[in-house]
Length: 427
Ligand code: PLP
Figure 1 (cartoon, rainbow, N blue to C red):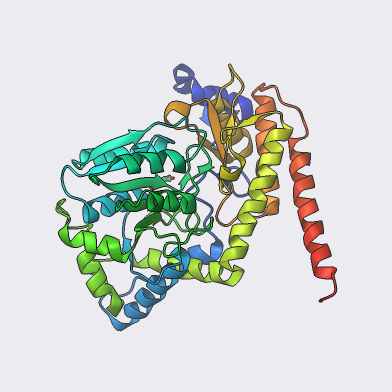
Figure 2: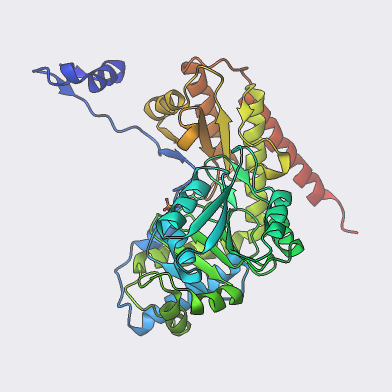
């Protein structure tokens, strides 16, 4: 007997019947592309995939140096910096550790903010490394409060706090902290703490200015706005951070900036780099440059605004409660009491071949997340929102039908405005 569809689903989930004799499970591969709508890893463009599918080259040979120069220069444009950007063969967590071990010493006090699961994760890494972490409270619906930060730093008259840890875009909540205001808060308190910024889900998708905003370490990863598979991470380093690294005493070897920064100007790396990911990175950087970074940011804002219109159209709540902190890359949808975010995600995956982001930490099952970043456009967003609306309905979540229409209206109005703008005669 061959089983498929709902019979197959029932069988696969029921372990007792799975072993039944004489039954063939017809494992179907779903047609069309999988919709990877988690907030990273994001969809890798074909151009980037093709660029990585090349024979690996000698990482000490002359051809490699050109690649090294291209990616190191291109990254400076992403971080908007003229200072060094270090590339590690690692995920974002590696970049977290590198930022800390290069700038701090055992027992140093650092200030963190309880604004979401990734902010908590980074603080936990700092604790495990032997730093004295002080966490300012938060409700996971707002970003870093610049006023509270200024007051805390003004109180620290002996300047015991050596670094402030800020997650730019908190991927677990869909809330973006206002970095220029954070910088101003530190300056107003005349405090010398380093400003360490997690830009894992913002670099390449949200406006980010390492030099202009006075960030000391800006860290990121390859698998979100940079549209690559996971496996690369980055530290953009200010002069002040570099100076701190000369006296910092946390043990480091693999993560040390020193050798990287001394060898990188030749186009080479001190240990084996992830060569094929660097091929992909060169292509991704070219794509972002062709579109123009400002246009990339505007596209993310436009798509995010349409996603939020859909959620509000369904009569559901968004986790972020402050308009100027709404994330351009991920929308976190709050489930009505008694309904499960994980059930919506399971239905979306099984029925529509679409992955949505899970609720993390204390938001587990209470929310789900729609990722709308990286290589993403209007029609992909509409497909995603159709899948979400169908998933919510099938999960029995009480919604108002019409969220998809609200998003359509938002996107169409935006295009009409742009069209009218182009048609207007030049002054
Ligand atoms: N920081 C943020 C804001 C993230 O979104 C993530 C992962 O999604 C991380 C850090 C951790 O990065 P990784 O999972 O690549 O180690």
